[in-house]
Length: 336
Image 1 (cartoon, helix red, strand yellow):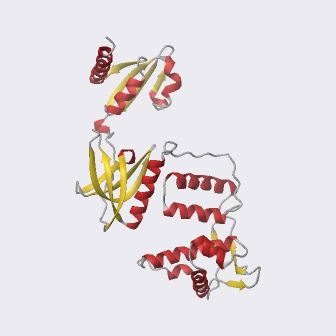
Image 2 (tube, rainbow, N blue to C red; image 1 turned 45 degrees about the vertical axis):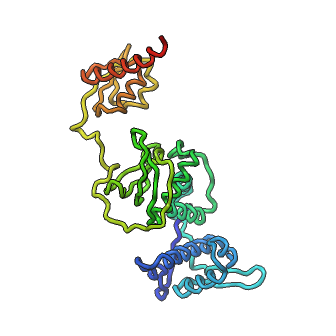
Image 3 (cartoon, rainbow, N blue to C red; image 1 turned 60 degrees about the vertical axis):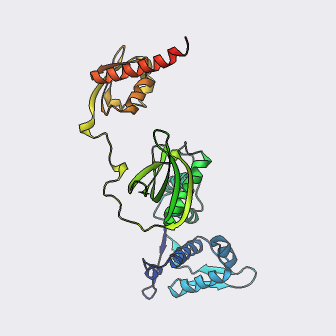
């Protein structure tokens, strides 16, 4: 069984959480985060030296000693041994409660956090992943569940841009980006990054664009450079409705579409259409869906050529034929 750390206190002890003040300066917030990290290390290990903690948190030994004094004043029952095998440790009344997560549940969460931590740089996710590893150090890597949230994020270029945008978001630094729009026109934008969003297999940054004087979504695959600027920005209220919370696929924009597919597509349609939309007949498959007639839908239809017949609506069939004619004319003229 695996667990979160439960701190058992006597009535006279003061909770470390009571020392937290929401509007403290950045340095004090970093100290609180380090104190919690030290506590997690002490809970999971029998004994740890000041040098080991200093190396782990990248601070001086003297800083660690001051942190230990702070924890002690907060009611954490610490003791220190001196000598060759000395170090800091907790008394027995600080223990791990192992009834919170089962081994299988812990395996799932660690796999999920591991994948999130690898594809999307985030200080909070990285910290959570490390803390979870500490409290579940006897984790078994069972391949009962494999999570690949975004296998297309292999580009080191995009990862580097993600890292810079994440850093700028956390420090509230303005960012200069070179961005290509849908018409491949390059523009230079100064943005205040608020949110990093992964939708499907694509990454976006959502922030305030100084050029447009409004919040905008930028696809990372269209960003060719990211420069963190020295100027900071003050956060303002986000729009009530975010782009990812709405869709052009609202019922009033959708149309009823009926397609007739050859049975050779039987193994492919499950990746495109919901099963309940498919009527499998002896010599063909009828598909009935409701969708917006946009470029994505036309691209999908063209990928099914020549095994698809459009039964309705008529305007979809006409648009499909026009696109086929355009493609044929362009390619036919180059072969004659």
